[in-house]
Structure formats: C-alpha cells, structure tokens
Image 1 (cartoon, helix red, strand yellow):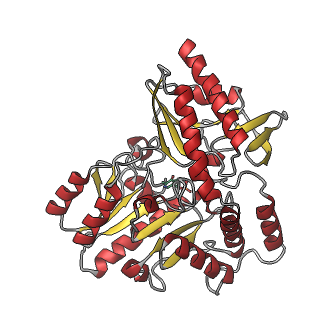
Image 2 (tube, protein in one colour; image 1 turned 30 degrees about the vertical axis):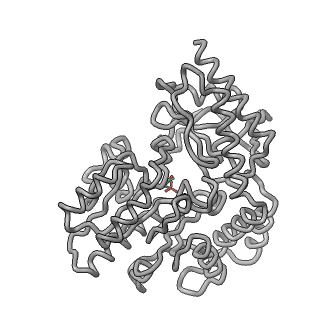
Length: 392
Ligand SMILES: *Cc1c(COP(=O)(O)O)cnc(C)c1O
C-alpha cells in the first residue's frame, strides 16, 4: 500500500476512500465506513454537504484568488461573522492550524516588544499540541514531535496543564512573560478536560500580569464541544484565539482572531500570506458557518454529545478495559487501562474510523451532522471492538 513517491511521513492504514456522504465513507472496494473522526475534526458538516458543494462550485466558477494586495469582500464578511461569534475584534486568515498558531506566536512577541520586553516568553503547556512548523512544534509539549528538529525555537516556558499554582509561580519568577497559550481541551493529548474554573483562573492571572490569554481552538472550536468555542463554557474571553480544522470543512483555511489591544498589534508589513483568506476558502468557511447555524449543529453537538457520552458510559463504563469516558459535546475520549496499539486497525475491520491518542485514548470527533441512529451504530461497533479486546 505504500507509495515510493511520497515522503514517508505517515504510517497509513491500508484503505483508500473514494466517496463520502454525511458521516459515511466508501472505499475503493465499495465497503461502507462510519466516520467518527471527520478527517481529524475537519469535516464537521460531514462529507459532500450539498450547501458547501454548491458554494464551492459557484465560487470556483467566479473567482478563486486575487491576493491580499486588494480588498477581498468575502474575507471581510467572514472576519465579521467570526468576530461576532467569538467576541473578537479582528481576524488574520491563513491556510492551516499551524499557521494560525504561528500568527498568534508572532503577535504575542510583537506585543511584548512594543512593551519593551526584548526577550518575550510565552507560557505553553505540557502535552500541548500546536502544530508541526518549527515555532509550533517548539510550543508543542510532546518530545516525539520535537525530536530530531533541534535547535528548537526559544521563548517558550513549559507549565503543567490544569495547574493554576504553576502559573502563579511563573508569574512570581519570570518578568518577561507576554502570553499564555493553551488548548481549552487538549485534543492530541487524549481529550484532557481541565478542572472547572481553570480557564477563568488563567484569565485572572493574565489580567493581573498583563499577559495575553491565547486559546488554541483549532480542534475545540466551531461547535465541536457544544458551544461555538470551548472557552464559552466558562464564560471567559481570551485575547487571541486560533481556529482552523472545521472552518473550511476540508478547504484549507485557518485564522488567528484577537480583541482589544492584541487586535491592533499587527500593522502593514508585520505579517503576510499569499493564499490566506482567498475568495474560495472564505466562501467555503462562510458556507460552513451558515450550515452550522442554520441546522443548529452547535446545540446538537451539546445534546447528542451528552447522550452519546451517557450511552458509552452505560455500555462500557463497567468494562475492565475502560478507565474513563471524558470530553465535551462531540469531542470524546474513551480512556483505556492499557495501550491497545492495533485498536484503530480493529475498528477499521469493523468499518469504523476513530483515532488512538497517547496510546490508550480512543478519540471520537464525529461530524456534527451525526444523527441519533448513527450515534447508536457508533456505540454498538465500539462496544463490539472493546469486547473483543476484553476477550483477548
Ligand atoms: C490540528 C491542530 C493544530 C495544527 O493544525 P494543522 O492544520 O495540522 O497545522 C494546532 N493546534 C491544535 C489544537 C490542533 O488540534
């Protein structure tokens, strides 16, 4: 199944999908799979959503790209929509999650320099994931992502996640901090939900210290957790947020949003991109927001997510293999007592797509269009897979 002409960066599963519809994917042998991963949290509207397909076809026949040398009305509309939803003031558009975090890192450093902090530092979390560019892998709290790419980018201070005391200690001893960057729920690390009150306490420290609170909402954002953005569960607002993944439902687009003084940091020349926010990508994102809103998918992620979680708890809570079921909305993790390295492959044999994080957390990120009956099917297949492991 390997291809000699692709760089060998992925241990790919031996399956190729050729068609999709909603939560379903067909492979080239016409087998049908239930997609509970959405292309890693990207296809929130599921596959081949007709409204998105129409918008893309229409835009492709009208105008794809002009560059940021000119005004782009669709980009301006998208910025306004996103800022309304997120309670932010301004947006910078790019093409991926890592680029959105890069923009946030650059913004924080510039913010520091404007305040005469010559070596600005950003507090980042253990087990965090922020991307694979040099700056974002340096911000990432996972040695596997960093190993071999040293020297890492300087200017990051590592703190344990969900530990407010650690931030107090950093505040006391480190004068050059300019920002805290964190995922409101850690995704790649295995759906780690911080304690209630943590984000609020981070907000308070940032206010007191004059630090920017930067939330990486690339995985949690745009309805995934049952609110538009995960920080809204705690009624706090960061200064900077990053979004990507679900924003284009597969059209590559990311954004860094900011409010207040943070929104005024970039000036002409300080940051740029050729493709970022082009008419095609913005048209896709506008269509995604229309569907999320029009079909009430954010609310549905909250209610169906809660039911799915309760159902999984009921079906698997007593399993000797299952330690915990956690998460929010349709971002769920089933924590196993021991590593199950071939679990993804076994699930694939049962025609179910999931991922395994940190060796023993089954991650579920189904499309937000998941129906009741499909949620039931998902639960049933998962139960079968886990029972097989119990028996083994
Ligand atoms: C996926 C992800 C990224 C990186 O996004 P890419 O589009 O792969 O560059 C960054 N942060 C978080 C929280 C993510 O889940």
